[in-house]
Image (cartoon, rainbow, N blue to C red; front, side, top):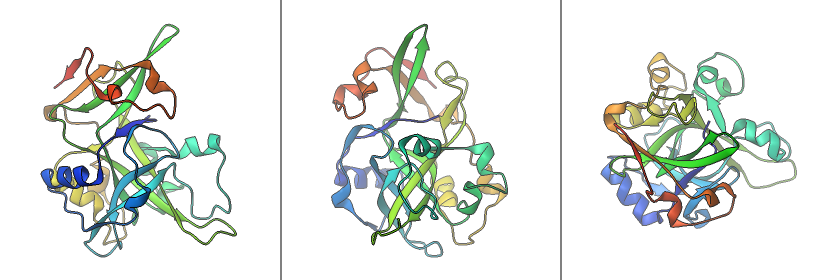
Length: 245
């Protein structure tokens, strides 16, 4: 699974990094709601790239809440039920039924981050690890999003889920699942292209473990990252490391 990640960059830094990976975004819808975050947890807001309109080739950054809420919900979900929708398994996404099937044709997105956290269990101890791209590029995680207006509310809320797949062999020591990471412009464009409104086999092929030739680096970080709300640049710094490449 993926239950915590980091995006500590300022909006202007994010825009610059997007240019580096050839991802051209027209605008940021609600930049005032964005906060740089070294320790982003469920229910926090994150920077998400999507099409402004499913049929138009115009990309925007939308500051969405993490934990997908179905559009038919009349009230906010409990924290426990929300944790069930922070991730979407790839094998469930491709099925022609269920919650993900109702949105995967028109509401695909990319979640921007510098890397993600996972905890290694050693006996009674849990050691947090941070995984990022070897070259420090932004990670583009494949996701789905949804909009909901609660009963009695006037504002529409946008929420998202991160799609996970089987871990590659270098991260299997840490967990059996990892987020789907899209790396090349073609894959990103294919994933964000919702013009047809349909799901396809080409989209399903993108839901796979990270290609090791692109390189990852994974290393332990301070245990303080385990507490939601804690913030420190040290959470992203190498102490001792394992290169996955």
